[in-house]
Image: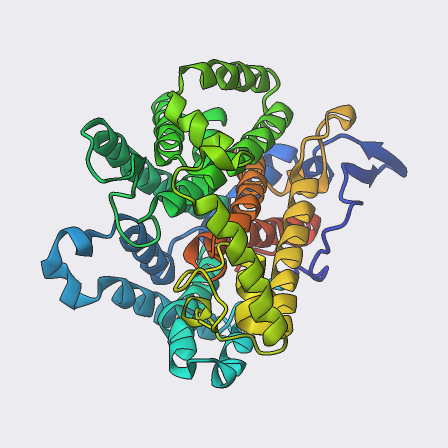
Length: 486
């Protein structure tokens, strides 16, 4: 049985031809909702669609398991309450979710692993990581990077692509991320105001782990900022939108308090993408965002601008980190040249210390060099495939869902969603565009190729694509043939 719902038409391919066109009465009509072409009154068809789709939107144990895992990953209560640490709550939540996923898929006659196209390059990247471990400068250390971190990343990615099966579940999950980042950002404001948890005047993450140091804190805030911003821009309950707007401001402040140059550059790109996407979704909003962007810079402290200016002016870099990064770029490339096919092992560049190395015990601070130096050409090719495939998936989903004002806004993709879902899905994909762009900029200044942030964004992209694919199949043949989503 196919992993996707075919509804007598086969899996739909997302192509540029997915436009608002259908035939009725022997002639082609544009810009009309395709529910008008379904048998019976349009209102009855929409009601039938909503009723059947509601059955597929029930959250199961795999969804709640990965939901709990994500909450534990971001909030990390086990660090605040040491008595929770021996229970290994994140691992238990993930294990429950994996078992539930396998049982549900077996009950539906499906393979245990979701058959999503973007999983292939991720699996290839993971296999390269394992295959190159025996040739590492520290084989057990390289293997530990896979078993202790990246294997969990792959498993959670599979859980997310399986569990986020409807706009409602996807929306609830993104709200979890927004709330978690809002909590961390609020604590960051308190720390900065009280002059605590600072490193040379730069804000560190109040929650350890993936946001412990200033650069990682800024990178995560920038990457997930679009989801809060578009939650505030999308039509919905007033209190929810106000909350999202408040979280957006808290995250912006935290990025500035971290005084990360990479964070500043990433924020500039992410902000531009948010403005461009918001203009498509809500005309007039872009002007408000631009005005806000012009108002904020003059009130920022001089210390922030001094650090930002060190990007191009070495004399303003009091810590010497700018020069150290340039040296690390050279050393990362040298490590790749010396080990072009196998690399030095996953996570082992910081342990790679040849006699001529200057910046000892440091990472490359650049994802392309991190992957090439640690996993060689095959790892670099697999990672490039993963990013390119994800970018293609994102573009296809964005193109199928984007508003088409010249044609009245109707399309086959539109017909698969009720109006409030349609608008939210467009906003979600727009947020994914900005988040992916922001991460790509951050990746040029950090060794973050194996960590959670990217793979959560990719999972949100793939989930939106899979939802759209199922809804396209349903709009094409589900109601007309009396079929119901599984």
